[in-house]
Image (cartoon, rainbow over all chains, first blue to last red; front, side, top):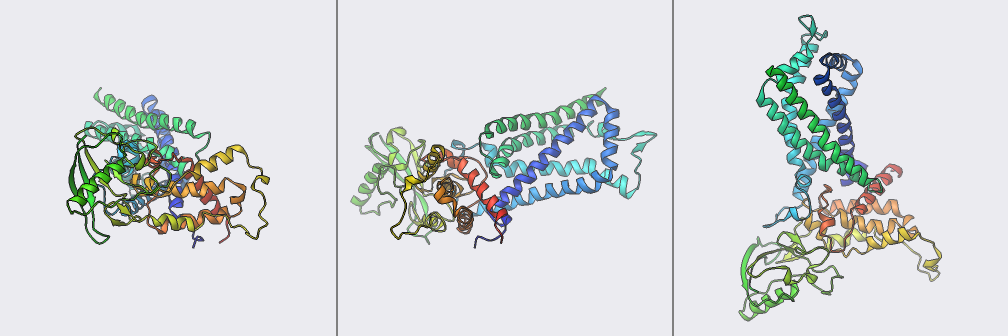
Length: 227
Length: 250
């Protein structure tokens, strides 16, 4: 009975969640690094954006893997959430979860759904127009009126304060999601050893610094549009 | 002290069950929580009412028989104790106390606050043992050297009394802390290593089959465990299972 595959067991599924999470966390860091150039050097941002948007390895290898990781992490997360809810068909009249665990650890599905809603907005903002311009219209030049269009498009989006606020809210939820998720991923992979305390500290720094970086960039871009 | 109790009453596994309010008076702070329930039951019996069913055995905090979700926490608000070792001095006069059974699909209610925890027995039976030849030639245990650190960790895992507080505390009703303690107490010792790969796979498969939830690493189990079983055991079980699944030829 035990000879089924790794991913059919509860632990295997958590392991898969952790692997996809680690991949997404590395991606997030890379995304942040490129975004930082937008507020330091728009020219560099334009060049990097053009490279990422037109390099075949990025477009046809990294991008599909990324989309798969996002979809997998979401679908598996929701599947586990439904299974977990089913494990307690009658709930407690009084449940004092705060006495023994953090809010974010108990509500990863909620923070996850907010992040997913943000991703939909983010795709409508940037990804769908990009795909349309490049692969449907067929304009791979990345140019508009003789100049790279990426930075201008970015500024245009962040001129809207409602969008900036939506981004900030989403990134706060992302910080909460990461705050539990980072350490949790290592625990799910069986890493609870002498390094775990250091890893968890690094996880807290990562969970605060990365979303904060995105928030600062969004605000700086908005302020730039005011001038 | 006088208390207002809100107790889950359910005649049998088919009954829907509901919270029933009771007022209890003259409770001493030196009574254990179970003694307080004894007083309530004596009152109920005198009134020709049905006493509240609850599990208990040793009342010394070592058998793992008592349970109860008290004000939303397994074994009540005190850390590192079972319900029988929880004293009424942890409550104040006039308090309202919710008393509910441990809730999980894998722990069906038998009556009132009594739940069927035999799912734990079946997990144990699926692999928490060492197969030995009992022909009378068993060697002296001390002839196998074991590092002190490993022995201590194995012993810490073995202090699990199987009460089910981990399942009750977990938002997912996961039995990972229990199962991992039982896996660890063998996996850490040379005698247990021989069957380690098969053991962890069989026990996790049984745990899943019983309908317990998955682990979200909230740490609620560790915080509520009366014996202080560590989350390190869950990481060890994850490690053991992943490596066993990858290594074993199917």
